[in-house]
Image 1 (cartoon, rainbow, N blue to C red):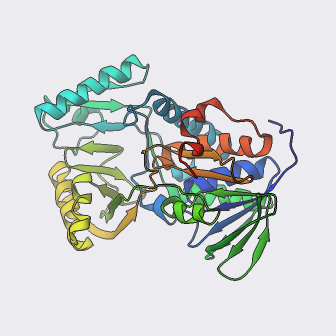
Image 2: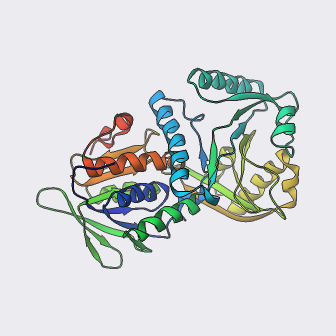
Length: 373
């Protein structure tokens, strides 16, 4: 795909999944890219996400659902371009409930998804145990939603591969240096980025992909980007051998997925609610592990390896903020809660917008200008 405008020098601030995808797409189309991250690429919130690639949980707005479906398709293209490798796990997803009201809502969602041509199967628990996940304790007659086109991604490995390829193509990676200032020229457009190590970069474009720190970066160009405060706790447990689960799943009270090798990731919205009570993260990890054992008894033989409380990057209305901010020429945002699912498609669309100036209609509902400056 060709672009009409000359390549830009672009500073991508934040090298999680969104920043990596934007920078990789820019680099492969000839832009001069500088990745900037206060930590190490892929080791922030991207590495502490449930990393579930899906649209089945994104039905609140049809345009958002469609964007996530496009994100799923983009992953399949990306796997074909860079090779699947240990970052890509298209093994489907399971979800079931343990009370009548939640079960009825789940079945309603299945009908909605089927009506929107989304691949979803309703299986009995006994069939799931026989065909997909023999280690589960799901009751035999319980209806289970199986979405075969969904996946999970090892975010840190994917970021490493994308950044590595971009660097091989000439991109620069400035890890361990935070952004202290964004310089604006007399014409109101972005001109420089100053880092915490004192260095200053001349740039044409800044992409704010700083995740939970995106509002602070926005303030450097006098923009207000309202964000939710929504912390989440994720625990990794180590199994003695290959994990007994093969795909991501939302069981009652607990989310479980493999994490490659002998590791399993655990998360629960119910446990997240205890974070602000001041509960010790070690106790939160114990509660997650105990919930997981109720669903997969074999996980009782595993041990808690790591636990992290991470802050999700969610704009105030819950939807992504992606694209140019017209009041600050050269400044773009790529901020979204669903960064894992949306990373590749946002990366492609935003890179095209930066290099050609053309705005894709798929992002129409998610433009930054919906938030006042």
